[in-house]
Length: 484
Image 1: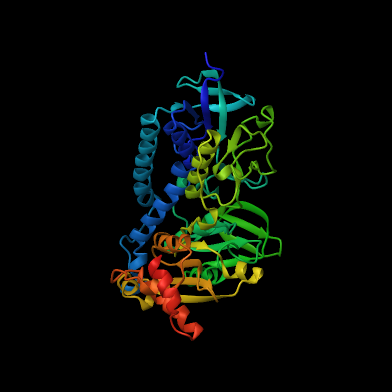
Image 2: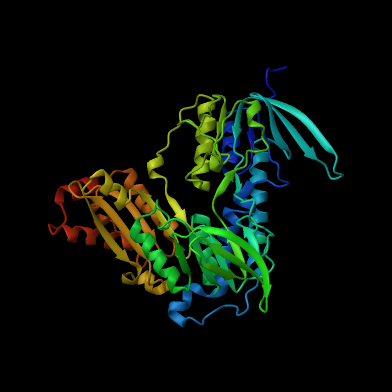
């Protein structure tokens, strides 16, 4: 018998765990995966990324949001939209993604165990499962390498009376039985902003509350200001710099309501409240102490540049290690961890990871922000293109979209790309590719884009940036760009 049952044992079947398991299997290793849910995919597929983004597409379609600038604010595909209408599309996509994920694991010979995992020692896990009759089944598995990809769960304040309907967390939104007329969202992080803008697009009166003075500090300030302006245009009330001191359900002539008390003395009354103050690492049931793995006060695990915990053969990847907590970055972390565990060279460039915020309108970015460059004393200039200046922007009815390029003042090297508007998370990859080449902004001047497309924004923004310099296109940069 080998010393260990498996070469690698992965806890969690979300994007990070799935990619780690498949990468290890591709290297010829014997791999097992423990998933406590009855289905694979983790939060990403079942309650997070996939459902919320599919819900967003259903909202955009049924509400007629994208075409209101052409046909008027009253335009809608369906007048009385219900939660059932919105979730019909979501359920279909979730089922399909679960099947795709399961098939990938099966064809790569990853042994899947639907069970709760607990550490017995640094190399051994106890798997506890409940069968259909409620009988507890238990087994022990050992592995040379263990990857913790347990993900996160919505942070819940014990003083908040959650009921999943009037007062809910982000994990409960998909279980709401009716669409509220008014909604208070506590917490203006990525998840809170996405849901706030989504419900506002449906005509729900939204109040967004956050104790920070600024939305999304990691996003370029001009882009965030554009989003804030658009939210206000959609009747969203922003209560920034405000802290919640209490929340309670009550009944009045309008029916079931929620009253939220703010520390400043104000109060917010709404039909429902979404409490979204962040995520907590789903590590409390893993008995990490038995393995010697350390966590912070929110259950998150610290790792080094190779995603190793303080116990070298135990890795942690995905949302459980904290920012940026994106499905895309989690997948890459899983791949890199598996490669490092088995001595396979693999590289990645975190500085070029794109970020996407699926609010309405959509936001995406890659590279540096103006605030970062200013703090570091890097001389730069910007070039902008508004969707309304581009034929494609007029065709699709997006008059608020903006693409912004940041480039070095002397070398003209592209430093950052920031976009708000329809298709931002797709459009950003053009800029990501040019950033990876370390090419000058003149690259876009020499490039011919299909017409009419939103990609033309890159050329327009490049010309705008060059015109700001007053010296015209640099011929040496053009030559460099063409060689690149």
